[in-house]
Image (cartoon, rainbow, N blue to C red; front, side, top):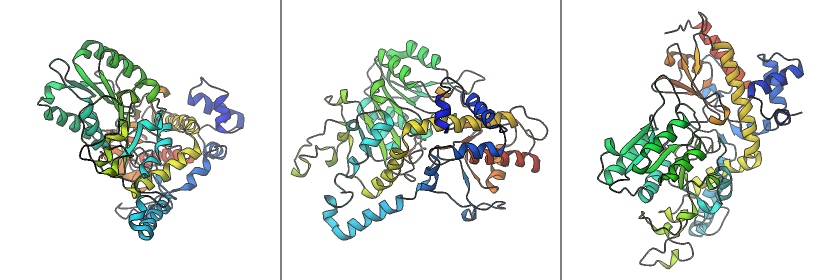
Length: 468
Ligand SMILES: Cc1ncc(COP(=O)(O)O)c(C=O)c1O
């Protein structure tokens, strides 16, 4: 039986329970390398790993004192996804079409420039749970957040606040603050932040709902992240959307850390708008095109918005009219013509998502992150003289997280990061105090996790990193 079949037999079990029963059936030690090998062997998605390019330790010339060889253990897909092997082919195809067809590559060739951004709509729609007509590839994430807020943030005398989470990603915070200033409002007054309770790391859903109840009538837009970049917490998007809309708020989600990572049902939840980048779990390359969603119920609304020739309906775009014949869907939020080179990069990865299937990816993610959690808690949960304590601040409840676990160390974070980097681990740290480890089910293996935890243990033991 493969990992999915075994998981299906224990539907309401925790990842730990599923893993324990799998190890017991095989007579394997839950903590041993042989069990990680076994899990990889019975992983139906194991072949996907070979479709990506893994960085090699020898190429990390900037890292001093390297003590490893071969491929890096890449646990950073939450920050920048790996490059699919087909990305280069897609880019070369576009360059070839430009070379051979020149201006005719606008309407002909493998990825015609004039419609190339339509090609990803179907898979993107599947990934965010939306009809393809309501999603579009354009610009970058913060630009899209601005364009959407320009349309949806219409403050009045009494309803003028935007709700974000405390410790929101800086770019979102700056975007929101600048939108307020554009409307003549002071962010100190108009920005409302929901925070964890003292002594806690993540935000309780009940606290968001309570705040909406108390302050709802003053909130114009709720603009939270689907999965929080620092803690890895997945918010209850369905309940928050419903509660906020009952209060008359518009609801937009930043899905940068959610898309391709957790299940999204934007249509079913009735979300107003959303935006995301494609270079994290969607593996399109740094700074590549972002995605946006606008619910079709807003199609006929004439919100003020910025326009360019790509906001014009495609049927009349080339009539070069004096006034914009605006596309009423999310496509009408586009301004400039799309770059096929970048669309090609997005498509290379979306094709792999389609092949793997989001359902399978989510199933694997449940076990992969669960395995990481299990090993960390076992080896570093208590903290002793040999191994300082590691605390996982991401929720234990699997419905409140995706791939990422955020770790806090009782020892100096930067020193730990430096030592594991020398040993071939790639992961990131974020100020003030967190290491993010995000196994991506498309390309990470159970052995990656086992190796990471082994290296972390070795570093604690060998480098005399002591509890602070
Ligand atoms: C939550 C979140 N918002 C905004 C951004 C900024 O994205 P961009 O530079 O593509 O605008 C990021 C980038 O990592 C992010 O994680």
